[in-house]
Length: 178
Image (cartoon, rainbow, N blue to C red):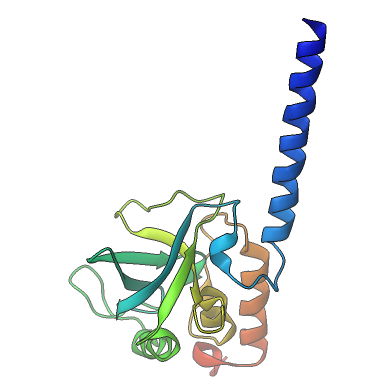
């Protein structure tokens, strides 16, 4: 009985160490395919872009359906819609997003600190352009076409805050007049 308990503990410890090792690998910035990250909910992709709604929301095609994706950690200015009023720089933000991904495909990565969907049923994801694996969430913030979202916690929070500070300091995008 004692040997069985020890053996089970060794196996569990080994599995735990392997899982920790995978998490460390998943964080490496030079990982070629974000779809290989095992520490978060992943949609394999790549998924073709169906539509760019605004600077923080896109639509992808998956299995013959069009699904809405909200970019984790990104707070872009609003554009006119049935439930919202346009904010300054909203159209420019949408146009910049469209320039980054329209006509392309993307990989999606979930976040351990976020549920897979928000209260409106939108998928929550880090979005990577399939052609070069550029993290679109961070690019929108770094270019000044969105701010880092501060209301919720997420894994890349500190990186996105730093990217926003860089955009503000360099007067990029919506920070030009500041």
